[in-house]
Length: 121
Image 1 (spheres, rainbow, N blue to C red):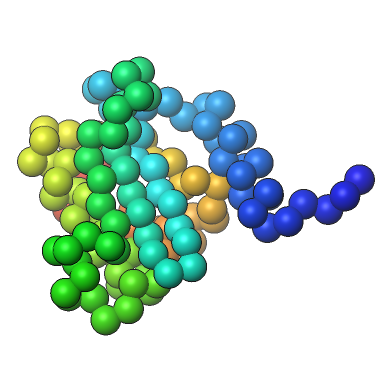
Image 2 (cartoon, rainbow, N blue to C red):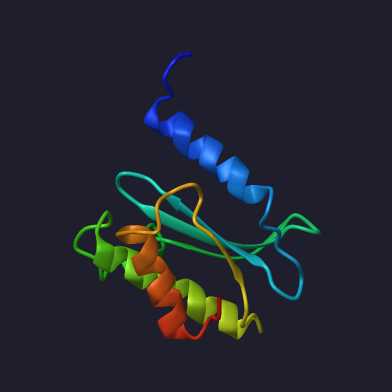
């Protein structure tokens, strides 16, 4: 049996998680994607297949404030931004989808930032 690459392993873990995690209109899914340079987060209603809110380190609001985009501080700011945007749309509770990544470093910082902004999960 061939050994999985890092990306293949992450995708396999993500698909295993997605079998259990579903976003509903009452409690949508907060999906996180982590690349080497940036962090992306979306709040998704899986029943309709619609993205309700999105934020990333590429947003104009954050680009001016952040020195570097691949850091824990940048991820925390993305979490705060998505939390603020979600609350403005009336979303208070979400299901967290870590995207197959470990709940560590930038992924946990994004989650903490979203919680600081007022999201519950």
